[in-house]
Length: 218
Image (cartoon, rainbow, N blue to C red; front, side, top):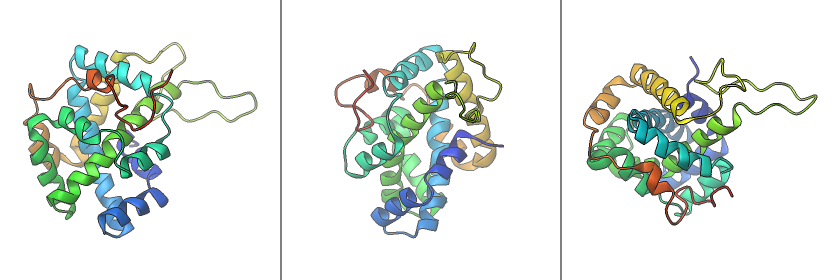
């Protein structure tokens, strides 16, 4: 079954994975494997943050402001050290950040330090991708253009089903279920400890410098 994590990992194959591989000093195949393991962890954790109405509201508002962010530009900005991927991670994982780094490093063979670098780069990408899917998936195709397939997790949505915090929460809960099925051990070791020590990610994203390293939408 298609998932947000799998779709984004597919989009990052080729040159993006090559860029990440070069920065980490690993092969493109290793980079692709690590990306495919890290993304379910990130999106599953976002699902935990959005499980409460207030968390979904805050995250929805932040995503709406960054709905026009280009994923390629976000990756370039992340690799160049712009944006605040580390701050996103701090609010996603809370005091479980170090454990998340260790668990991902062990699962992928990257080691803790490289796993942390990868998560820092992927966190803004995951946010930009999620924003694109929330606000672009229901746009009507131009006359004469083929209809686009719905985003994973949004099958059956119609123009009457406008993007909303509730829809976002539902999408992320579905993603968390799929991630649990694919990477249960890794997620249990990290997500099982998440709770009150995670922060208000949405409110942080609205302050100061763009978390994605790109300007918010007007």
